[in-house]
Amino acid sequence: MSQPLWSKLVALVNLDKELSELNDQIKVASEIIKANEGQIKTLENNLLKSQNVIDQQKKSIKLVERKLEEIDAVESKKKKTLEFIKNSKEYEAFEKELGLISIERQDQEDILIKELQDLENSEKKLDVEKKLLENESEKKTTEINGIKEKIETLLKSTQEIESKKNDQASDIPNEWLTTYEKMRSRVSDPIVPLINSSCSHCYYHVLAQDLIKIKNGKLLHCKSCFRLLYYKATDDSATTPSGIH
Ligand SMILES: [Zn+2]
Image (cartoon, rainbow, N blue to C red; front, side, top):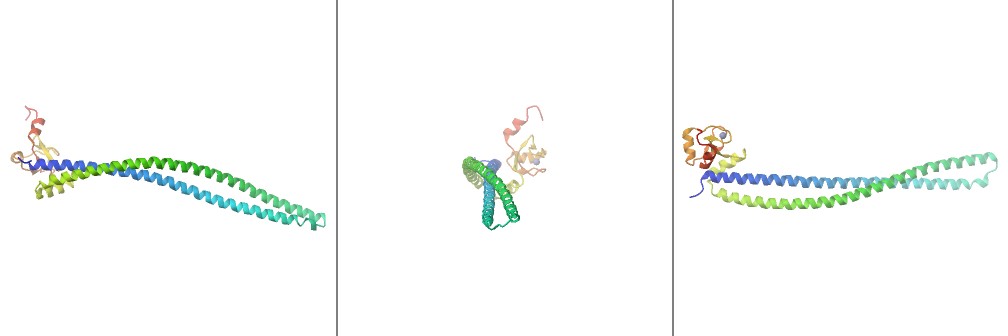
């Protein structure tokens, strides 16, 4: 004897449930991959920012070094005027100008020392970030590859279930399939068993004449929640202890 219609539809529900669980797992796994890739991207961006900072610092250091060269040039030019000094007043002015040049040099040297220190710190930071990126990216790539393999397996299972579902569906009349798919898009359990003569989803009590039809294998909609109702002999005997009516 071939399977009753309700049992084919129940099998379809179970396959659809398996499919939706697999899809959930695939979704979660894909999100983990995305999060890991995002973390690597953040580390790469940090590295780029640090590299930019270093480039700017190097440029600024070059400017200060050029200023110092200019100061040296001005000073040596000034010193050459010494032999043309005629009196102490001119000498005083000469000394004063050299003093000012020396102060300016000191200022620029202080700036240079600070900027070189900053550059050294930035380069240390860059090294730390490079190592971090290297380690993390190795770790995360391994993790991502593992998850990708898992997704592959899940996709294979999905295909197997899809094919089982197609086999199962080919055995169900089209009008029932259409009804099923329509209901399935709204609820995850479009067909439920009768328990104690009631819909096991919403507990709506089925009329006596409908109960007979359902027990004879006919599929009827619950008048309250509209799910399809089926009767399975063992369900009633298992859930209705003898002596209780
Ligand atoms: Zn119901």
